Amino acid sequence: MDSVTQAALGAAVAGAVAGRKCSPKILLAGAALGTLPDLDVLISYGDPVSDMVKHRGFSHSLFVLIPFSFLLSWLWQKWRPTRFNFGHLWLLVAAALVTHPLLDSLTAYGTQLFWPINKPIAIPSLFIIDPLYTIPLLVVLLASLLWRDRMAKLCTAGLAVSSLYIVWSLTAMNMIENRVEQQLVGTQLAGKPVFITPTPFNTVLWRIVVQGEEHYFEGLSSVIDGDTEIEFLQKPLGTWPTELASQHQQMLEHFTGGFIKYEQRQSELVASDLRLGMGEQLAFQFALADNSHEWVTIPPVRVETPGARLAQIPNLWLRLLGNQDIDANLCHISECPKPSVPLASR
Image (cartoon, rainbow, N blue to C red; front, side):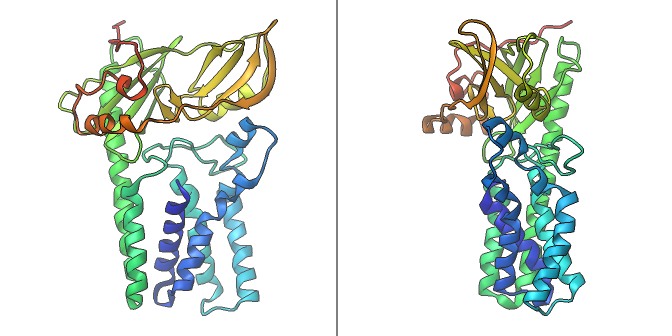
């Protein structure tokens, strides 16, 4: 999630755990702890692919953060004595730190909660910026500064509201999953990998990617659609040259769970993460190989992604409200000229 959200979450968690000992300084400390894991963005791993796949790694691991919380609590109590006993102080520090990666794991990017022993965990029920999650936390923090005798209760209330929103997001995601599963039964895509994630800033309109053998299928579905049938766009997955061995390509395959497409642009072969973005506006694209003469791997280069156009936002909003005539599966959003493709039965 974005830094504002993580800071607000850390502050609210610290305020709730502090109880009657809560103060503006505690909220400030919680906000700092809540953003601390993201300082790994300052670390360079040598190339853009490594920077991407290793973000939210060790600094977001429960195996690192929990021991680190003991060390940080000990240092805090040693150099700046507080009214908290060690156990209470540790709980505050640990909760503010650990809730950061737990929230991040609910986004499409994923989080290496158990680094170094597994791939990123992603239950993508939230977009990386969602005002409906963040605003309740910001409101209660502001109210806490106005009514300081109620700080802990207000922070607890804010966390309850934001947690209910997470429950809603998981419920909506499950609703879309069931819708997709029912539609794919009896088609050539039954049992194929499916990735579902909310569109920007909401949990009502969802983007679906189904991975076939040579193509992937992309569509939109709103929880308030009158007609629950999803129209899919068929797009080529492309292939990676079998004769090429690339550590960076393997890293991307592992990181994306296989949701990756390959596209030749002039002489370069570009790999794109299908999970992050929409239509042709995919957030992470990297040139990994070149065939000016023959296929060879090249040092990874981040490819600039076209930015979303403001003129597309009204269409996206109308689609969110269930107006299925406003787009033909992302065409109004990404200006894709291809028609929608019905799924063929077996």
